[in-house]
Image (cartoon, rainbow, N blue to C red; front, side, top):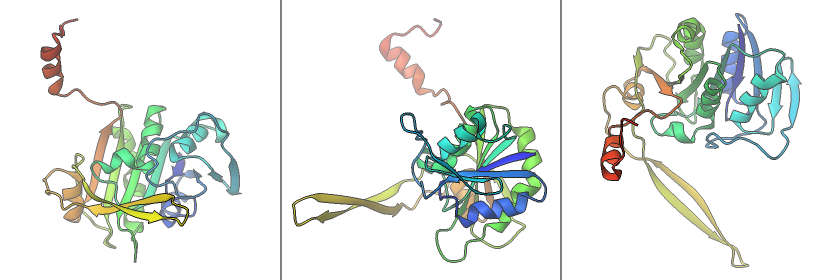
Length: 250
């Protein structure tokens, strides 16, 4: 199987290479990843400027674009043949709930699905200290065929794992939680009167709702979340039809 690996932490990220080490003995693996960190770039793509690619090793390329750019390049012809699957990550830090809106790692998996290739995003719930990528990399190695059989072209898969060394973790199929942050701005004024703002913050304590990705990871399980490419219909659509006198039969 031909596998494209990418991420938003950059081509030197240990999470990316942990997946490669797990998969390369069994598959033809390619890396086409950003040449530096592109965290929180969401689904940005480059449409006016050229994208520079550099060969870094055998089947390893770095690009100066976004994670979604990397997938577009690979699927559109930079690789000698289309990949059978795109795996993005392993991201340093979780991508839970509404994080999937902002994450470049998740966007790469979404872009793959948009282009008709199965996309899987991987993240581990840890930022510093000992980061345990191997259990999640081995989970993907062992269950990749299962995930591909379940793929139907209408979704990608977002997988998060606790940052623990145990190999034998429970697995839960989940939906995205609501993940809010306490945002904080830090202001810096220059001697010339210019003002710079640095945005930071930390996650708010959530309501841990059973069945959500955050609940699963918090309780030590691997969270597997199928995410639709297109927004699904909501009951609120009927409210708009009634308010705007729209004939729903048209």
